[in-house]
Each structure stands twice: as structure tokens, then as C-alpha cells.
Image 1: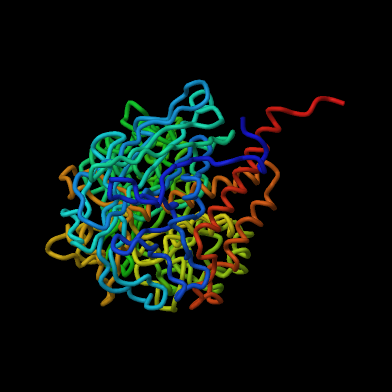
Image 2: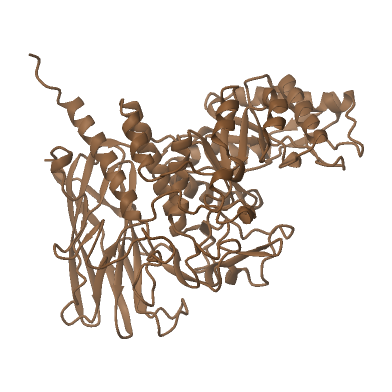
Length: 636
């Protein structure tokens, strides 16, 4: 029985101990999902009070937000249709081979079980940061081995490893191995009724076994299937993959509540001018399953939130060239950019066929259509503005105003936006230039704002890859995306999640791409600068030869932030919007982004335990509200 917020006890308990297991030679303890444990020292990488005074520190092996060694307990809370996670840390002072971890089920009210694929064990893979990412000499956590990639265990509910791990090549200085534990609570209340779920976790090695009790308390509310935090993560590699491989990346993104922003899936065209015809055969075969949601069903090999729902939006393939050279879609542009009637007739013909084709399918109609002319990306001159206006008018003639959103990306000033706003539906503004007053002004004129770029500007020059995913930054830069989106009532855009793609113009990758991801954290050299883990939230399966996508801890941190966004939205819909805003403001203590916060790395609290406490308060409020609605007071 779950009582009120004040009486709710532990939600997910891993009973381990930081005391040495008798005869086993091993120590075990647990950490939350907002930190990474140094495999050599056993300290948090985020334990850097020399960088931020409020970083996590102290005796967290004994006690932290999810761990209490005295009670031999880890505590987590979960709604239905939600992932929660914790980290099991196994330590040894001496070399130990064949450490085994077993944890395969939780049994709850009425014998209901959380088991199988809903309990995932992932021994973390460490990558080496040799120097800080450019632009972050002061806030980078510095050189060292970072827990990042999370290759799934081959056997459900089982994990095994050696300390040191000979495959990871840390060497004899490795003293511990972390195992990431993902728990997913089913969506249906009949499958996961509220209450306590108990199980047992065992760690075996060096002649001994440590058995750990696990207790999971499920709250009585459900996170929605829909992704309400609008935005996407730009990608340049998926359309180059075979369709079967691409499907796995889309499913991983869907499961982690974000959408790949893949530009320019182009159907084949035949003919010219007004007689141009679209051949939908390959286009529909590849993308139809994302538009009708069948890619995210059991039959399609999917499980998790968002079952059967289509992707939230698609970028239409229309494009033009920035400087008047030949190129663009649907037909080539003349070298001096003087479109004639035949040119416009081709655009209008293709537009009409796009609208007719999408409107023919009821579920396809629900997918938002976005027109983004990549050739005019971040263009700041009157000639570019004239092209934006021209193409918006042309697309509105062909597609119909309101059928699609015309998007521009860049840090446009007030004067430029006064000229452009009648033709712009969606503005993805650089975080460096995201001024709240300016964005509010143009929001009132009908422009939807998204932010793009680094979450933290240590210095004005940090804009280089549009990324806040660098391995050597605090994990909260990933989780903070969802929180900033709620605080600003804005969407978001990021650069890449699969940055080991072969576009040599942007990514100067080493001759051995495996080293750039799986071994060395530095994966991107751009404009003379070097970055660790830039745009690499999902690894490719080179490690085991599977070719399947492998999540990173940074991707899990993004997921946590997007799930948090759903908490705040649910609070608002339940009439507790002011409370939701107050909770967010207690963490994001200043307005993020904009010139006022250049060189200010303290836009939020830096202790993940504080973020965890806010989520608990939000969850308890939602649980209590759900309980009251199910059990209203008797009529007087």
C-alpha cells in the first residue's frame, strides 16, 4: 500500500553494501544515473568542487540520493511507461576473473513481474579522454577514463567481466567495473499495478557471492507515449545505412524519447517542369513504417514507450543552394539563381504530389511536415533573406499555408527577424543569441522558438559543433536539455548522435574509426579544434561485430531529461503548473542562454542528487493527485 507523499518509502532498492563481502574479495556499492565512476580511483568524475562548489562530494560510497549502505539499500522511484536506472559498482583491490552479476526479475502486487527485456544489465565501456574539448579548459572534467558506451549483456539478466577488463585496455590500474542497470515499468496498469516489487541481485566472484535485495515501488501514474518535448537531433548518416540497420537506430531514438532530424530523404523524380512525376516506391518502402508507426510495434521488433506511434515530424527534401551554384531539389538551380516559370512549375508539381500522397494516409497526416532549406542554413545577408522569403512563398503556393512549417536555423538579429517573421513558422536559434525578450516578441507574432547549440558557454567561442554532448563535460549538460525546454517553453535541436559517419568535409576521422569512438574519446576535429564524444550519443556495434546501435550514458542522461519534461507537463495539466515551474527554477537558477550568460557556467545546480530530489517531489505530487482522483472523499 502506498501512502501520501510523506509516507512513500523507497521506490527501487538495491541492497548492496560497500562493506567487503566475506570471502569474495569484492566490494559493491551503487550510484545514481547522473554521475560516472572513475574505474581507477572509485570516485565520481563529477566530484570536482574545484570547478563548481556544489559538485557532488563526500562519502557517497556510504550514502547518496539512491544509496544507503547502512540499510544496504538503493532507492529509486518510477512511473509506468518510464525507464529508471542505477549503477552497480563492483570493486576489487586485486585482479579478479569471472565476476558474475545476476538480476532478472522483480515480483510485485498480485504476482506481477518486471522481467525479461525490462531488466537490462550493461557493463560499461570506458573511453580515454586525453585532453579537454576545445573551449572548455575550466569546466572540462579533464583527462581520464570515462564510463560511456553501454554494450548490452548477451544473456538477459546476466553480466560477466574481469577486473581489470583486458578488452578495455585500461590496464592494472583499473580497480572497479560499473554495471548500468536499466529498469522499464510497463505502460498498462494491469501489467504494473502500483506498489512494491521485490527481487534479488547476486554478485559472484573470487570464491564468494553477495546477494542483494531489490525493492521497486511503482507510482500510480503513467508517462505518455507521445514525445511532448519538441525537437530533434540532426543526423547525416541514417539515410546512408541499409534500411534494416537504420530501423534499429530509429527504434533506439524512439525508446529514448528523441527524434532523429534526418534531412532530405528524396523520392525519385522523372520528367521536368510541370510534368515532373514523383516515384514513391522506394520512399514509401523505407519511410512508410515511420509515418504509420508500424516501425514501433511488437511486429516491427520494438518495445518501450511510444508503441505504434508515428515519428513526430519529417523534414521535407526541398532545398536550394546558398550561393547560386547548381544544386537543390526538386530540380537544379541555374548558376545565377533566376528561377523561371518552368523551374517554379516543377516545384509546384512536386509540392502538390507530396501533399496528396501524405494526405491519403490517415496516420501520415499526423506527422508534422517541416521545410528547412539547408542551403540557406545560418545565412546572414539580404540576398539570403530574399531567397528565404521567395521559397517560403513558393512552398506555400504548392503545399498550402499551414500544411507545413517553414524553418530557419541561425542566430538572426532583431532587424533580420522583423523582415523574416511573416514567412517563418519555426526558428531554431543559437543558444548564444537566445534572448528571452526577443524570442517572446517573435513568439507573439506566430514564430515557434527552438534552441540550438551548447547548453553552457564557458566562453563566446564555444559554438563550434553545436553540441553539448562532449564526454568530458558534466552529465547534466545532457539532462538539462529537457529542463531548459520546459523553462523556456521552447523546442530544441542538437548536432548529431552518430557522428562516425563518412562525410569527410565535416569530420576528419582517423584511419581507424573504431579508435575514435570505442577507444579514444576524441572523435572530431573541426576548424582546428578537437572534441571528445562530439555528437556521438549512440555507438556503432564494432565492439562485438553486431553492427547494432549501442547507447551511451550521455544518451541515458538525455532520456532522463526528456522524461522529466513529461513530469512537468503532467503537473501543469493537473493544475500544478506554478509548482512545476518552481521546481524547475530551483535547479535552473538563471535564464539559460543568451549573451548575458556567456562565460557563466553556473546556470544550474551541479549536484545530480538535487535534480533527483526535484523529480521525486514532482512524482510524489503526481502520485498523490492520481490517488485522490481514484479515491475521492465521500460526499458530505
